[in-house]
Length: 416
Figure 1 (cartoon, rainbow, N blue to C red):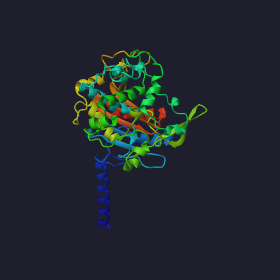
Figure 2: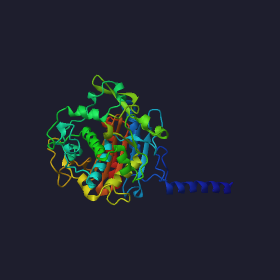
Figure 3: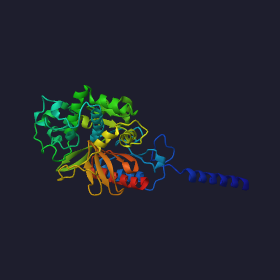
Figure 4: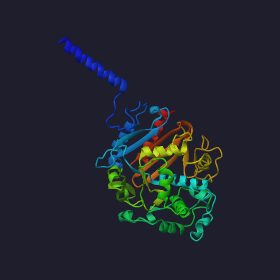
């Protein structure tokens, strides 16, 4: 009996040693295929995300959160992705294959194309619209490409209520020329160059001009100039309805957003998935569906000057992209020669925002993507060589901002 007892104790001891050395993986936290064990955490972003989902699913429709993080001090410098919850109310788990609508973060891809074309001397950001579209849009002729890309044009943003009058209208296919014609009929919100206002019409018009310059669809230019050189295969251009245009083998990987209806002045979650809705109203300003792991690779290739990946922009063009103006209300879009800092906490460059992170005491570049039922945050922090992608399948601002605040705390504790 004694020998059997000793064998049993020895077995238990070995199991404890293995547990101690290698740790234990949380079954709810799925990892990227290249990572064997979950990295040590100071602050559990996984637990925060899952609690956020648990507390808010019934009220706002959030079912899943996707978080990719990378910095030298975390996980030996390799990217790590946390998968929390499900892709939809039916229960398909969020995974490394999950795809989400980038929404208005699609403008980052478009901005890179514009700066590459400037490098090739096929355009200048100081060119006026009249150079490329002399016979149309007379009220916009003196606006420059730079003013389009840094949101100082004064051109009004697209107001959904002008185009959508019923649920069925969300399924309509909108044509870019028609949208631009309607937008052109509206007066400028301010004289170009004097103020800052986020306007998706600026991105729509820029994409239209790029197609005129290159004689190619914007999808072709982005695939050949960005996605193919970086070997990114899980970005998909959606012109109309995601569910109809995603490849058949990828349909089960789409993260659903959920629609809110207005009742007595309040938004109410009604369990209606938006993946059957058209994205054509915003066209190139919100056309791309992507994967968080590959999107993190894109961001690092764009902003990390020491990246081993192919550089998307030469240093001069990257510096031009990161030339910021003050985008705070009432500040007059003045230039920030020293960039964003403790005194000037927010700025906007060419297609990208910068904010001062008080936790890190450093600026970070940020693109916030909005679409029906989906919010995403894509960021790079140069002082830490840190990047992150956060996806929340809810357009409820309070919930998505709470998830973003939690992630910024995580980055502060893990990467500083």
